[in-house]
Image (tube, rainbow, N blue to C red):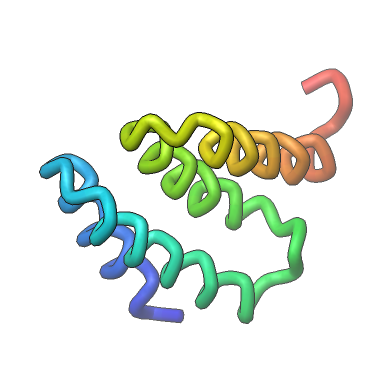
Length: 84
């Protein structure tokens, strides 16, 4: 789990450089590690789903991006009060 931040940060650099496949691989690795340590609807997972969604958005794969953004929203709806 301590490696997640490093994978995530390196993924962000690749994303900024436009090297989306490398970014995607690192973001997905980060998510998989976090999913092992956390329950499936844990709010900390939202950032990882959003990061992966943003890469797909940058790649023009909008349906994949939308699916991940919707997953993030579902988790937030569970974690936050309805009037938040």
